[in-house]
Length: 81
Image 1: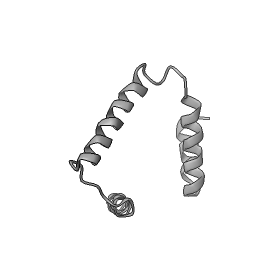
Image 2: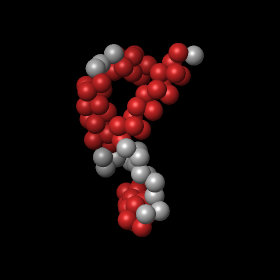
Image 3: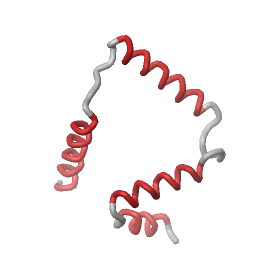
């Protein structure tokens, strides 16, 4: 089946099922050559730096629900164009 057809079908799924599908697809890439060597180490470094910024008060935190609401509004506005 062509990627476009699979994507078309996947986008018709309810949100929870799409999230489960994404999780399974990401799990299928674990340990594959698709992920570049050093990828985990790079992310660990980024995460450590961001945690330090939060602890030091240098980071501005946002409420997750507010961020999602803004993102959904942006996507909805984009779709209306």
